[in-house]
Image 1: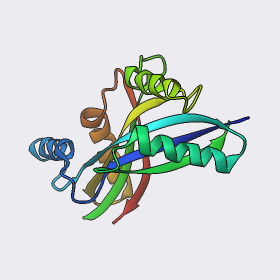
Image 2 (image 1 turned 120 degrees about the vertical axis):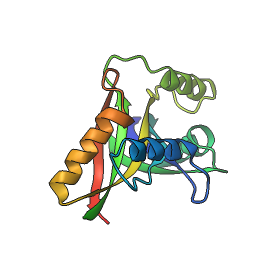
Image 3 (image 1 turned 60 degrees about the vertical axis):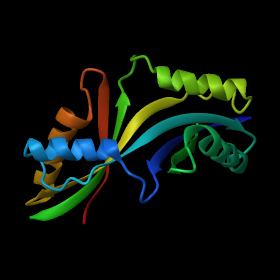
Length: 85
Length: 85
């Protein structure tokens, strides 16, 4: 079994209201730090998976992202920085 | 003024307890999805800044990350995917 490590970014789907982002926007405008920050907030995960090969690891990772790390109704995920460790 | 867009990843500093990551670890182990996931949880932001040039934009972004998006006592930040829009 090989070990792989990946970064996962989970963000809201287009059109889903982002109250955390809106709150940060308000703060940045009020403090005069930035006029149009258009902040979007998401979640970031680092996950290890063990698998026979890269393809199996990616499949496992997809399953983890879909079932545990994101809510597919409201959120989308992106796997970045996939590498063997 | 030019507009720039960047992704910001905020994660816990080494040694800071990560209860969210530990909770996800527990779920992944209990469901048999992964034995040693070692999940780490962080936050992900997309931010727009307007500035005269790239250097000024990066300075502005650093200030926003330090003062608004992260808690420098517990968290570190990383600026990724910086580009002009």
